Image 1 (cartoon, rainbow, N blue to C red):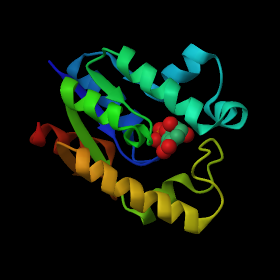
Image 2: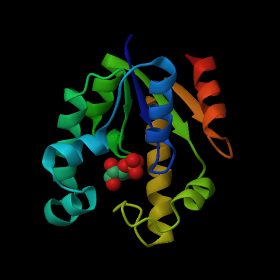
Image 3: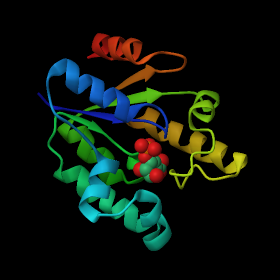
Image 4: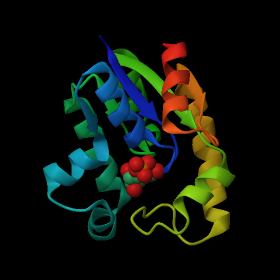
Length: 161
Ligand code: S3P
């Protein structure tokens, strides 16, 4: 079995779906954000504050390449580095969990554990638009998660695989 990589904007449900898929398939899963926090013994917002985004991206790329679990939930910015997209393409199937900006805003509200979600509505919109194009460009499969519960999203994924 090749690796299933879940990509998508913050709040698109990557970690939740990875966990559920792992239960259903009786397989292990990994989450790049959790792995970064475990390996570097720091919370993600602290890495951003103390070392900056570029250092975080270095950690993220390193972690991605060290994971071999059959299901991997990635951080929303995994697509920021071309090498990561190439790696995922070579090693598995990329599933884009789409959620509209409206839906993401409802889910995240003002979540301060996500440094790039920030305070400014304008910046949020710009990042969302930029990322949407990046996810679309690399996805093998796109699943719309808007107003869908976990089981429906899982069903949609299964139909596409
Ligand atoms: C980020 C998304 C976050 C986390 C970090 C950066 C991004 O992961 O990796 O805060 O650049 O979109 P989630 O997508 O799990 O929130």
